[in-house]
Picture 1: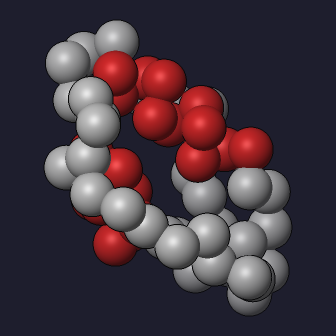
Picture 2: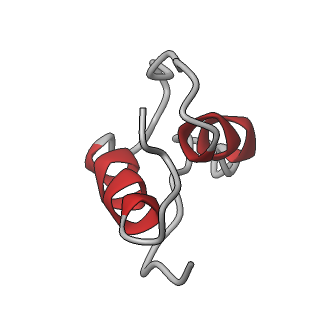
Length: 55
């Protein structure tokens, strides 16, 4: 999956575990320190177009 940007915290850490949970259709908690929460929806839509994140 190619996306334009990655979800990051305000300190610049990439939310790898959250992306894995989205891909595996598992529940995840929105981190309070996320810089741009809208990117998680974009990632979910991109994964769903490939048959992942169906939950």
